Image (tube, rainbow, N blue to C red; front, side, top):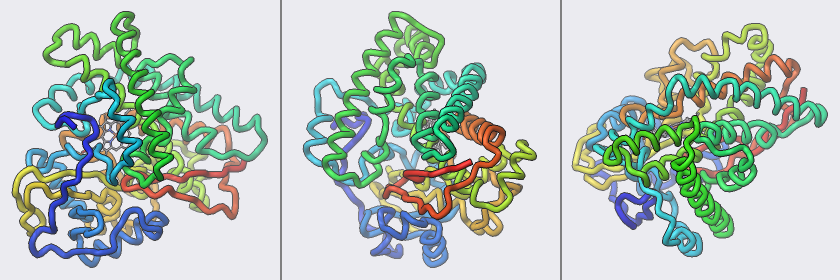
Length: 426
Ligand code: HEM
């Protein structure tokens, strides 16, 4: 597949850097990790903060200091591997994605400089304060409507399906400019996308997701053409205006690919943030009452959720030249697993990191949104969605609580984490 392809199916794997401890067990897919990654990571951080995971073929970094250094050194540690499937994709799914017209390209998260700088400038302009202001009333209205729908069905609801999944999907679709009439199809195509690249989905599921990815790409291509002919007041039309003003500075295919990638970047991860957040807010005695009494606590609570229980527990980089890191010589080609979850629990930075404390003074020092040139473009949008969602729930559902006795299931995933189901009562 071409070097600039959105997903590259790699098989290369570098050996452990010389002298680096090798771990033969570590796997983000293991049951113990899936159930409680923080306990596993605390043990590993204590034993060998940097190690080579034999099973994965990745160098694993667990300290904030090392993770931040890799993010900072973008010329040495490239992000070109972040959208590559972690595990091999089955042939039937790969065949679906070899359709001649399936040709999205790397544009933001996995594009290297200098193109990344050029494309990001335009994408960042689209995440303007004005666009956020337009979206905010929409988010509030949808939160109200989703709560009303939950109420209308009695006093029991599965939050992920009823609220957590639809809210961020619809928000990102309105941001991009997709018509509401297409929401049902869009939700279907973009659901379960995280399982494809970062999960260990069985073949039938991979095939289903690949078919949806292809259908969604085709939809994006048609939608961008439609907006080019008939602009609206949305992110896509802004990108197209920038393209028309200077086609050499922002390519047409780059716009199609930004639109394609954005709905994945901003959908399921926010659902997981909302689910993780509610688990923490509702399972800490007295906290829901405190938040109801003082909604001003919500902004720092959201930062603490991102630190303590982020929907994204890891990210990746690949060394593009020989370098040194944490005292080891790192050969070019080394793939790196940045444990954001571990860095966010690093005792060197956070006192009693295993305690969920919405009053924590330095909660915002988390690295949940990455750092440096690829720093999350949607961070303000994600935070706004979470704040408005928790505010609305606190006002409208004062008696909200977790259904007693439920155990939460987390789908095995290399990078993303959130409850599959979350049962609430009020
Ligand atoms: C809680 C929610 C979210 C978390 C934890 C999160 C986390 C991240 C992380 C860790 C990165 C990689 C940073 C790096 O490589 O240094 C990233 C990149 C990105 N995120 Fe988010 N994200 C969230 C929500 C969103 C939303 C809602 C959107 C879009 C609306 C979005 C769009 C992006 C984009 C476009 C990039 C790539 C930026 C670039 O490479 O220049 N994210 N995000």
